[in-house]
Image 1: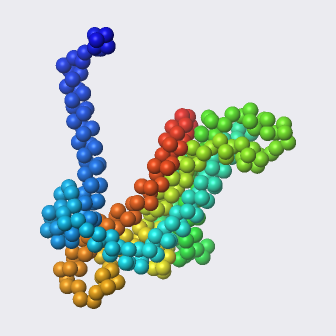
Image 2 (image 1 turned 90 degrees about the horizontal axis):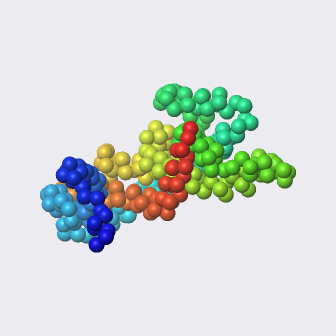
Image 3 (image 1 turned 180 degrees about the vertical axis):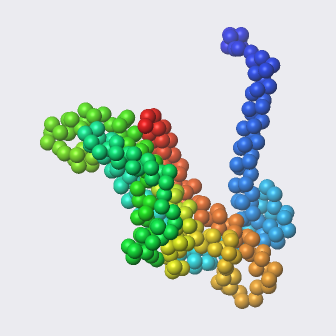
Length: 302
């Protein structure tokens, strides 16, 4: 009873304000959740129900026909293999290079750090464009190789600044002085002290690099010529936009009518979207704790 007596009552204007806020948040949540549920329901519905427009919220005539067709497609498996390979290498190298760059910029005794920071900042607003990048990749003989996708973005200026801020605000300078007194150098401090204390920011860097590479298709579309090297997102683009599907390999039948191909094409789009999203949906919850902590600490000061 004492809690109810001491509770502050909301005025009418406060109640109206809270009602508007709750309504807005509810509509915002629905606008995010409904498309996800719709895609999920479409992927499990029958092709006939999907094309006829009978799917709104829950699957209609549920089945696994779309997913069976997806995993019969050899190009999808090739895309998965390439995407995992590119994403793993890109996330590992990008995290290491960007963290080391942030570590160097965090050292106050490095006299050129302000100049380099200024130069890096300029590159965030101005770029050479597609043609110079294409000519550079061609000149370096990296065309039609995975390094054309990995090397150009292996250092992220923005993530490097976040790593620098994290190191400055979370790793005491006294640790470096202690390492120096024990005969250690910068490399020893980096490997034995800084890296073990930087798990949150390393998770932030790895997740950002992995997400960027996994969702990317433009670089592969420009620099890769061999279908055997295409990542999953480029194959997904071909199916969703260009509608390049080998229906015979998907169903094992040579006698598909035009209507059946249209039905299967629509169902395959939704199934592929879910299949391509699953790896990130699985990995993100594992790194969410470090991700949030690293972003908050790394954004305290510039």
